[in-house]
Image (cartoon, rainbow, N blue to C red; front, side):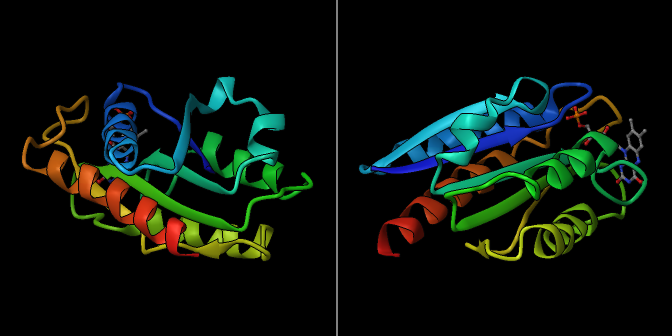
Length: 154
Ligand SMILES: Cc1cc2nc3c(=O)[nH]c(=O)nc-3n(C[C@H](O)[C@H](O)[C@H](O)COP(=O)(O)O)c2cc1C
């Protein structure tokens, strides 16, 4: 079994919904075990024991939330078994991919031993509090499936 830990931050619930859809996609693939958690409740021991980590954040001022930035820095101090990572974000305006790119960069700096599974997924919401644009859900599920299949090939 390949163990994947999915952790997200959310203020209004949209990034959580995106994380759940990604997990739904991954769970369709045999051989993948997933744990999903809000960043505030994340079990660090379980994270340390995972093969891959997925991190999701709302776009706050053109980057990941402060909570996620701090969390990445905290992960950098752990002794991780994980070899792989991927990120996702939700955004409202013209900030497509900005938070995911910043997360990828920060993880590259703080956790240089982790390799990127695939480029980050950026999902648009219809208003500050959501909802997630309906058509975007399919991309979340596909992202999950793609990651699962890629991890099984490694
Ligand atoms: C403090 C704050 C700053 C934000 N800044 C941006 C921004 O710079 N660009 C953008 O596209 N969306 C921005 N948003 C909209 C959020 O990306 C949107 O509310 C978020 O995707 C909702 O996710 P959540 O329900 O998981 O909190 C901001 C939202 C908040 C609360």
